[in-house]
Structures are given as structure tokens and as C-alpha cells.
Length: 210
Image (cartoon, rainbow, N blue to C red; front, side, top):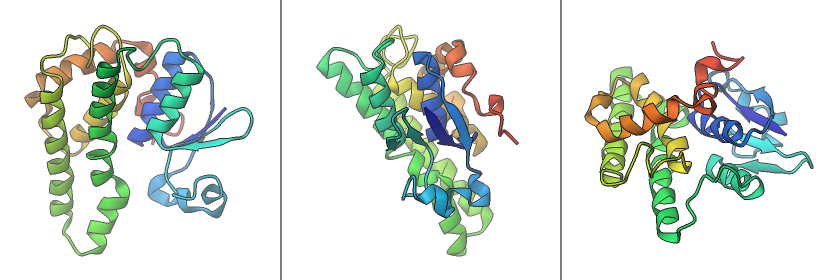
């Protein structure tokens, strides 16, 4: 398999964690987002959105969107499972993950922040926007799992929820968000980061890290 990504991309970070948890190897092909390499014609032929990650499987099929990639990995390599068997819990895990992957991360990503700068917002306001988005999303996520057993987001093992949470907390810190306001999320993060699969997927551990 080939994983197209970028060391600081939280979406690619999620997929790296999933690959590690599943014990799967992949050739990592970096595309420097700040240099616009994701808009190169060769990469647009792989992913017309010009976003990372994209995963090419061994048969050459291309998958895009991190959550879809992770669910495909979970279906084709079911151990360890990243979604609960119980339908209600599975829906709760997906809802938590999508609160981050759909409603938080995209609104503060590089593409949106670049557009805010193009519209003339001063850098201080751009950074304030990103911090506000993170606070809004993480506050909701804290409440969503407040009564869930730990140490992970949903019980004794990591799920799709944890794969989305850990990269988003890293984003929040980069934008100066005081994450101590989210003790339940930090509990799940600590449990996750104690696992080599999470630790080895961290941005600073990647070959293309700046």
C-alpha cells in the first residue's frame, strides 16, 4: 500500500495510527501542503480534491477521506476492531469522530485559513478563528464522552474516536488552546499516547517532519 500524506496533516495522522494498530505497512509518500504540492497535476490525478491523505491499495485502487480509509482498513483487517459491535455504541463512536473530522478539523485547516488571509483578515484574527473552532469542537466532544467508561474515549480499547481525537488535540495546542479545560479528553489522549501505534504515528516521528 501507499499512503499519500503530510507529517502535520491531522487527517493523515489518523490513518497512520490505524495502519499501526492493524500492523500494516505502507509506503509513505509526502506532499508538502505549505508548498502546494497537493495541487500538483500528478497528485490531482490521484485525488481530485487535492487533499491528503489518499491510500493506494495493493491492487492500485485509490481511497480518499481519512474516515472512509480507516473504515475500509477496519473492514478488511478486522483485528483489532476500531468500531464496537453494538450498533448504538458504534453510532456514538462515529458521531464523536465525525464531530471532529467533519465539523471541527475542516473549518480550521490550512485551506480555510489561507482563504481567510486572502480575504484580508489579519493574522491575529486568523489564529483566533482557528482557536475558536477548536474550542467549540472539543467542548462538545468533552460532553459527548463525559459519562463513557475509560480510559479511552469509549471503553478499554481505542476506537475511531481516539484516532480522530489525538491529532485534533495536537492541532488545538498549535493554536494556543488551553486543553486543560477538557480532562476527559486528556484522559483518553494519555491512554492512546501510551500505545506505540499512536506514539509512532506522531508528526515529529515522520521522515518528512520539518
